[in-house]
Every structure is written in structure tokens, then in C-alpha cells.
Length: 192
Image (cartoon, rainbow, N blue to C red):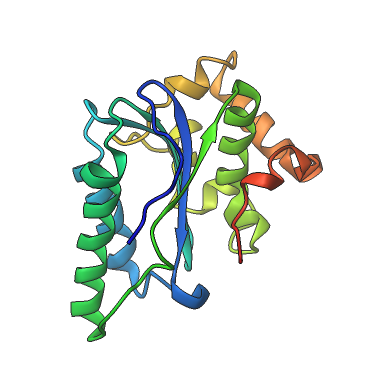
């Protein structure tokens, strides 16, 4: 299966995402969410990659990462996808692909996109009507960003170092409701 044609470079940030086959769910019960995050932590070793932000949704996931290796597909994303798919297939007594092809990748080529993409990722559950506030959705890194949880996965300083306080970042994210999505609309799912 071919992987994204994006040229991966160490030190650069990328938006990674994928969705379930036919936009079907990829999470079926409460344990699935935690298991995906556990696998993400396992494969996203600090010497290979920084996970800047993440959000797991019922039918898809969003990852914002900074690479330390160019071998993203074979060392991180392929094993993550395969291990999660195998576990779900066993649990759900199903066979075949769980995801709609290989993960998608977009190079985040400037800091403005980086900041707005982190906001988009954290607001995704609110935009989808799954939460009224981003901190209500436990399957994203937002709670870590605003000090409601301390996790070992997100590299918070990449974003938070650009704000005077976590509250300033919270204000920035919550202003998304008023923000015009044009800045990042080219980064959204390719439904074709």
C-alpha cells in the first residue's frame, strides 16, 4: 500500500490523519480509545517524533507532529495502524482494513498553520457536536494544554512557548468559533 508522497524531513512539523473505511467508526468501546493512545505512546518515542497535538474522533484521528526521523511511515505510522487494526479486528470479530487506506500527511510549512492547526484539532469535538467545550473531550491533548491533565505524550512547549500562558492558549483555541476556516481548509480531509 503506498504511503503519502510528502517528503518527510527531520525537524519539520506535519499534520497526519486517517479515517475509518467508508467513514465507519474506528473506536467501538471505551477501552479502544485508551488502547489507541497507549499504542501511540509506544510508537511515538521521544527520539523519533514529538506529538504536538492529537484528537481521536469516533471515525478518524488527527495528529500534529514534529519529526526527528524521516522514517515516519515504517517506524511509526505503519506499525501503529497495523497493531491497532489487528486488536480491533480480534475484538470485533472482523477482518480487513479498518482505515481508509494509508494515513494522510500534510507538511506544516509555517508557524501560522502550526498554531491554527493545533486549534482546529482541539476544537474538532466541539465542531462535530460531541462536546460543548474542548476540555470536555478526553481523547485529545487539549486537557494537557490547559493544565487539566499531565500526560507524557504531547510536547506542549512547541505551541505553549508561543503564548504568555496556558490561559492565553485557551483563549486562542476558544476564539476558533469566530475564526474563518479558510486559513486551514486545504488541510482538511480529502473525501475523494
